[in-house]
Amino acid sequence: MILIAIGANLPGPDGEGPLATCRWAVEQIAAIPGIAVQAVSNWYESAPVPPSGQPPYVNGVVRASGAIAPETLLGALQRIEARAGRVRTVANAARPLDLDIVAMGACVRAAPDPILPHPRAEARAFVLLPLRDVAPGWRDPRSGRSVDDLVAGLPDQAIRRLAPP
Image (cartoon, rainbow, N blue to C red; front, side, top):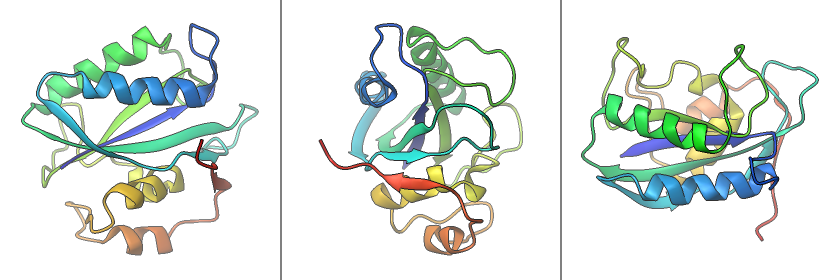
């Protein structure tokens, strides 16, 4: 099981809002050779973490399957981000698209990139709540903790599920 977090808080190059960009990203992920999208979470709106003057983010998670190397998937996701207008500047900058590999099966690795599972996913409601939508039985392969346990231990974060279209 491959879990990919999707987030955006700036309009894409076509001027569409973050939700449209996130939906477009799902289509692009589905087009990666060797990947099959199995489920897409609800979409959520969340305050930036860490707090800043940025606009809120739209976040979701894709559950996919496939046989692809972590480095190959990371490169494909970074190319999708670039097509959406992402330019890497400073850490935690506002962006038209952010794609992160949260986990790839039971793979645990500290280097090279991507680090798996994602090192900050377990502390972020904007990752764990949509992850629970698509993989309610998921366990962090590093700690063995269930997604429900991780959600229960989250600090208070401003997040809300968006209404379905």
